[in-house]
Length: 351
Image 1: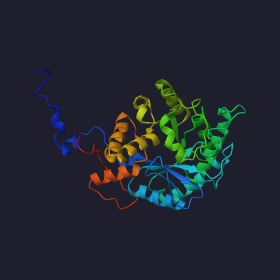
Image 2: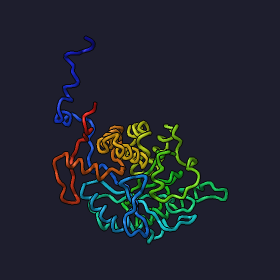
Image 3: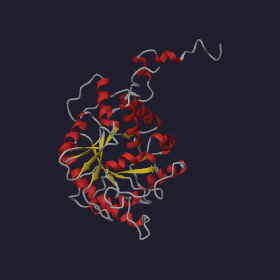
Image 4: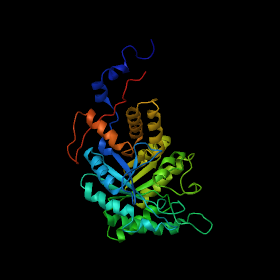
């Protein structure tokens, strides 16, 4: 015999579902999940996104239904992306009060604003005809400081539409300070800012570009972080906190759990992560081929993100996993303010 066996038997704490639940180190709660949603201007019904089975571009009517479903399952928030019918070099639709994203924000606040947090994506890529996250110079590069002026106006427009949490995803230097100054100057000091601080140039964004009808040619490597650089991600986090970010985020989650863990160790503000479109698509496609259990794999992935340090997670599985957590807790939600504690299950017993 080696070590302290047979007196020490770690399997004692794994013997039954009740024991595993009791000693679980990481617990997943519906309120810690945020649902990203796409709203398509001019759509008369929801439009399926082929690379993200189960996810849709919403019409205004289907958007309202999906909002209420999310609230009924007790998710923490919704993160909104607009899909406009027309785009231009400056992304003028982003600051139009009647632009699709600002309209969606108002609808969300009216429908479920008392039940969950309404978040808005602040980036120009959905609104520019070139598909980049900022204003371009004559040579086609992104002009950081000119873009900040557009971000200032976007932040105010989204706050006036009713966004409670403005999510800065463009990865421009100084964007948090610029948006905070603009919001405070416009009387929106109560509007919170989420910084996409450690946002990496990832191959796993592909399905998202279909979801927002991106017209990008080329890549975003001059402003998103290279996958090889962990310290740069942490540096961006610390800079955003210094500039006044209320929440910082690591994106994607799957390939950057080390950055997420290091961020959680040093951050004095909440730390979130985004389980992105490619992560969702891989799990869903494998499940459709019968290779894995979809809900069990999604749950395991989300628990791993939480274990690495995320306080909340943006995920396209949000409603389905919230429903599963509610069912596992033996409860049935009957209103939009449900709060249910749940412990993640790994699903079927492993081989």
